Length: 353
Image (cartoon, rainbow, N blue to C red; front, side):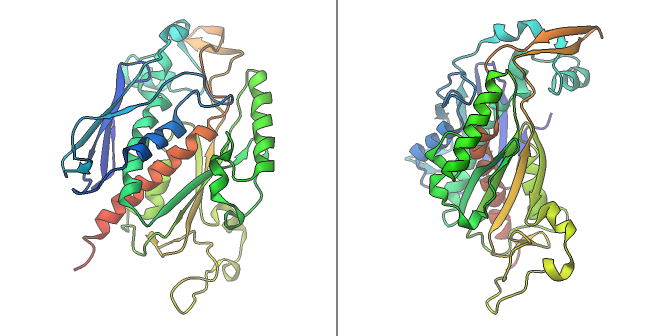
């Protein structure tokens, strides 16, 4: 199983949803970085369960404990080890699916690949793993002091925030529980999620992410292009079904004369349909992309499935689950973006004399 991400700034993780703890080791973080532990914990608090009425009600404090690689609040250049203890497992909620495959989950594929699986909350396939990414991403953000990364909910179901990101106030992202930087759209999204939740159903959506002040030159062609690694990172998030950057799929409808980003004399571009990346390398313009999330697969209603023996069976979902994963995934998207950019930032220091 692949449990590591990154080349120079590298994260390796461990743990299961209902195990004693999750955690990780961060390699490659330069020595001498003064860490703001409150900022790291604040990022974890943005992702943790039980934070509002429209997310899973599992109660986890998600307190990170650092074990190595830090002395006197500074990184030492050695491996940064950390753990996050699990304190609120309810494994009995999953006992009835011990021998049952839930539709659109990792149950079937994990069981067939490895011969058995940890059925408690999905085990290693659970999105609980993403708390580890938040820790590494929070440190990466502190390494990238000049780069500003903001992600936000841009749609829930068929409710789309139809405003360019330049017209949005990113300071409003945390002003509501759905993390949409527009109050009127946020209210509609929240109401829609609450209605879906009452039905025992789930709904998907999209997250838009904007990285500003990114220096020119990040990205390693040919097979390690910046947009390719961002896409790989985003598609590693549980429930993600799509990634597009810049003009994305809309660009396929345009003519070249409409799509080309003309240069200003200072090297910036008059438009930014490239999404801040050309030839796989950052060009100094804003990097922006959108990530699509499917509806959460666990439904709190009856559905048909099969057992390990191949028998058809009707079951009903139990436990504590997100009716929409998008609001809690916003800090996850930011964290992975920061990790990708931090990795390329360090790699870029070796690009030329």
